Image 1 (tube, rainbow, N blue to C red):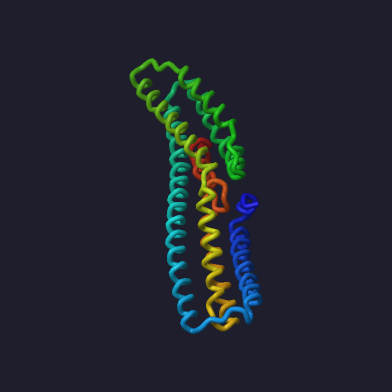
Image 2 (cartoon, rainbow, N blue to C red):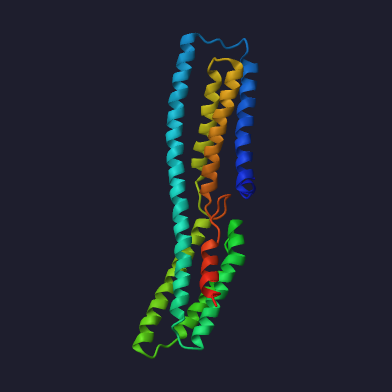
Length: 262
C-alpha cells in the first residue's frame, strides 16, 4: 500500500498523505469530544497542565523528527552525488576509449553507448519501481572482457589503458553503491516512532479545553503540518524510487552531449 502510494506524482502523494492526517485528526477529535462529553471535566489549572505537557511532548517529537529528516536528506544528497559521479565516470571512460586505435575504439565506445542506453531506458524505470536489473551487469562484464583483451603496444597506450581501467573500476563501484541504495530506507522502528509519535502529539491536544470551533481548526492545521513533514521524510527516504526520485538526467546529458555529438 505504502509503496504504491509513493509511486504517485509528488503533488498527489503529498495531497493524499496530508489529507489523511487532517481527516483522522479531525475525526479523532470529534469522536473524543462525543465520548468525553459530560464525563471529563478539567479545571483551569488542569488545562494549563495539559497545555504544558502537550508543548513538552511536541518539542521532543519535533527534535526527533527533525533529526530523522536531516538524516534522510543527507542520504538523498549522497545518492545524488553517486548518480552524478557515475555519469561523470562513464563520460570520462568514453573519452579515454576515444584514444584507442581502431577497431578497439569503435567497438568499446559502441558497448559504452549501449550500456548508457540500457541505464536510461531499462534500468532506470525498473529502479523507479524498486527493482534492480541484471542486464547492466552482463554488459559491464562483457565490456571488461574486451577491455582486458586490449594489448597496449606503446608507453602512451599503456598510460591511456591504465586510466581507462581506473574509470571502468569507478563505474563498477559506483553502480554497486547505487544498486545498494534501491533497497535501503528508514527501518520499521523509525517509522513507528514517526507515526506513533504523530498520533500521540495530535491526541494529547484533544485534552486542551478551548472553544470547539477553534480547536478543530487548530487541530487540522497541526495535523497538516505533521502530514507535510511525514510526506517529506517518506519522499526523501527512497531517493531512487520515491515521489522525488532522482532521474536519469546526468546519464542523458553524457549520452546526448558526448556520445551522440556529431
